[in-house]
Length: 355
Image 1 (cartoon, rainbow, N blue to C red):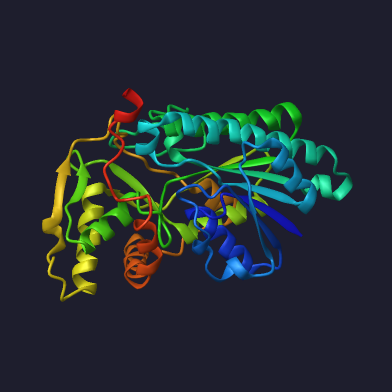
Image 2 (image 1 turned 120 degrees about the vertical axis):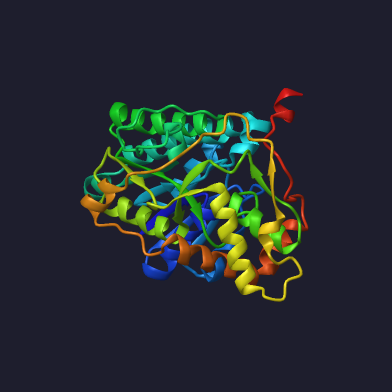
């Protein structure tokens, strides 16, 4: 049996690929364009496993995507390919519209035409799993949680593009009958995360003795989910989720950004007792806030826990320590990234979009 995973060289996608190769006997077709955040080294040993097949393909290229379906005849698609960084969407929203909306539409059409050609048990078993974000719901006040019934209210170009893709997936289900499931997750963290997101930025800047930039006063709250726990949830939804349903996946771990920064610094102090930058907390500095910065996200995971029996294995404390340790032990991975085009610079001020 074969599953197509789009974005399988990305952060969350690579975790899903690794788990699939380690824990199942299925063939995984990794469909990835390999943009700046795609890295085949994130697959670890799975990269060279004979059950891992890499297809360097742009999801916006309908003919190429159709050929992948015909060539590999998957039983399911897990769609994780996306532009995903809010700050980048502020500076350059067009890429997010193209990949997240046009790309999802193109993929849906390829999947629909392929599914229309299936018969019997193969047709009944096929699934299209769309992976999305809690940011489509907008922002919360001091109380409350996002549920599957929370109205959409995206506030950034990124979240608007993901909300649009969610609506497309639902429309293809309602209009054409395509068997879909959707998941919306909270903030992921863990090994192999591209160094533009908060936690790896904090780790790498602290190692270099650079200032640790925290937006505003650091009071924005996020719900944190360890990436391996998320990958396990995605696989569970693919196999057992009810067609046409949405499942929210969260870590039940709310932390302010300043608390996350302090926790990272504390772990670095512990793991690097001889660091000249201890205490690393002294490196924290507050910078101008992100435009339209949502105050708080928090997910109610009751549905996936109740219906599918999912539960997370890592607490935030254990997961964060594993994450920091991984970056310390895998310097070659992130040094190769930093030696290229990407540097850990401040983006997301809207300068490119306005120019």
